[in-house]
Image (tube, rainbow, N blue to C red):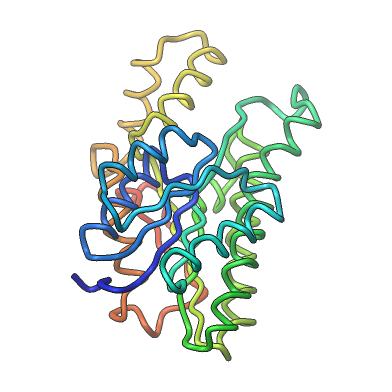
Length: 256
């Protein structure tokens, strides 16, 4: 129960990796705000987690809404300790076929959404004056180019750079900022990726999944729970001297 009395916000918390992160923090005693554009999913999880959980329907690209997300959390639980900017979307298309509006939407959610969440959290943590933790969701795709994922790669690379800058700026306030960069984690989100590649390559979803599985030296996909374990550790006092870093979890697929 290392998070007893602590308060955590998780964006994209209603499903997949975000849901596993919410569940992990809740099991360790935290108050958890489940922030998700899918309000029904957030509310369903909040019901499962009980009275220490709050559901908040939000568009992470809305600056005022992200400020209100933090304010509502503080009003409910009395403060904020940890912000996890996990929400994200993907676009599968070669650059020459990418619609500019679709490109902008990916960057709006994946990069601007992280900026708005981190900024709102940092303002609150600075005002509280007792430090805190911000953890941003990036991806192995933010470390290298991937064909047909230009917008996604660019947005996730931006998250890594933003994380490093925030770590420097917020260190005087004892606010640690790190990122996690998953490889292939089997979630409903990843199944959407598989469907996109299947349509692009003219194969079925199962073939795509098997091709990606074979690319992982560890021989399998990761699980949302494994990502949640790592995020919970990054947020803990055990990682107190770690800031500005990107923790990879990818079965040795991406080495850098």
